[in-house]
Image (cartoon, rainbow, N blue to C red; front, top):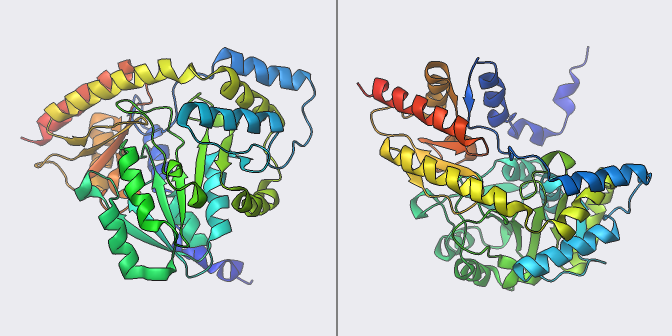
Length: 391
């Protein structure tokens, strides 16, 4: 029998199955486990958005929508970006409705990268960008930002470009960040924009957590370098709609035209009923995220305060719903071993920092997209674990 796996795409050998998902599955089997692993809102989708989806079903919106998305949704999304963040895109030819931000990342990187191109990826970061780059034969250049408050600075970017020159085609930026919750000021993004301005380099700006900024207004590199930016957003995090799988990708018209080719031949179009719901979210749900944000901020403050008291060094999250905490001295410093030990002995599930690339070693990520009751229970268990393991 021929082993056909030997004849599959060679880049698949470079991509490992998700360690994040593997540990989440493992820890879920432990009875009474307190989970800080899941990166999705624990809130339900607002009622008026559910009603819009139901109305779509009753109106028989069960056929193909236009490939780039219904015009109603594209208009609503464009208006949302303009009203909220001052970003102006023409819904006719500069907006694509994607199957979540996940498909948008795949479509963007597949569209702009050729084999041998290089992608600047500030780490720690959600590993999806790295995997997608590898699958198209590109080379991720991982830049450890842990010594700079988990931010890519203009000087760091200049250094990378000086070393790798014309081979760099994309700079990936995710803000607010998964896994650190750190975000950028407009001034910091302007400085990064100046480094790549007028160079054949795309800025892939993943802003899916834009509505969950706590201590400052959301900023965007597209404000200073619109012509080179591909901006990703959506309703998954802001409106607790992860299962609806609706993302938004915007770029200048000439770039959007090319992006739409990969999008068309990958998924054809997103679900029409989900688009009805997303249009309602953008049109009439601009404040839906605010109550969620207040709760997330309270959870953030509780976790940050208590983890710090227990000896964890934390970058205080400015957005999203993650906190990145350095394991205290005196405890197991191998973060992968640490999370399994914590799960087995304390019945608390967190995610290893090294799962997110360079700079994540010796850290853990906790998602506070879970109830305050569960957070308090988990913190108490962690405190007991730290006390016992530090003896």
